[in-house]
Length: 297
Image 1 (cartoon, rainbow, N blue to C red):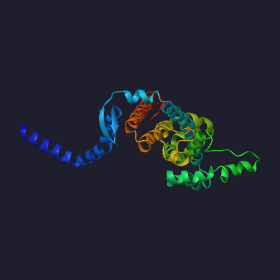
Image 2: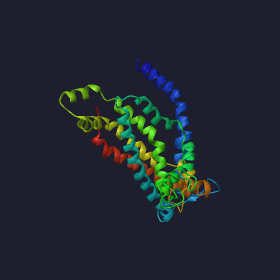
Image 3: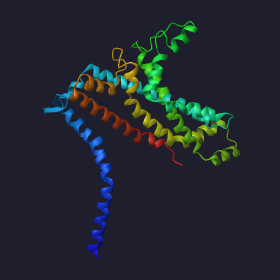
Image 4: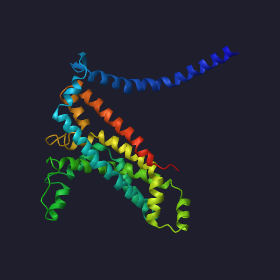
């Protein structure tokens, strides 16, 4: 009897393994193999587009952490994250709270602020490239109308990172808006009705009910925005190409430049490992610190 049960369980495991085999193959080819190769490259001397010549240990890591360009890319990445993540969430939360109100024409309002989600990042960047144009751009035309001197949005080291950050905020607004609006609509109306019976006003309901019950969604939105900001590439490549004078040379763009332009796959791999470690540490810190303030219903 026991032998029959063991054979039956083995057959079930074999059948389950066959169903999972395509998933494991896809993950192995497109996820695990590139990750292992990247780690190997970061500890090796790589030539001719991917041939490992020899093991050199931590030399690449020592090199990048003594390279002013790489250190600048770290600084730019963290500054970019500080510029984008708080504003993205605050603006999206403000719009979601308005869209959640029972007002006339609110469906049209929701559609307008969700529509940007249908535009690709490349198309959005191309549109903003015209808006930021130093002579023909819409933004400088508005400034000129009010008698304000034009700004070199994408060609000045002082303005380029801020300009790209504003572009990123606009590009990510719709997704954040929809996620937060869904979280707001998931809060039970009975809670608000009970609070109103107890004499709670609008602001009391907002800070004592809405935001605490929205905290799981806010936690998720903050986490994906922080990760996304550290992996931003498309808008950088189209708008500034990491310039001027590396003012927008984010870490991801630095990895792309080292690998695809200069052919330094080993240096790029070391930078990619550093980016992975930073992303992992930030994610763990969020789960350790921020999740304690999350109130699940």
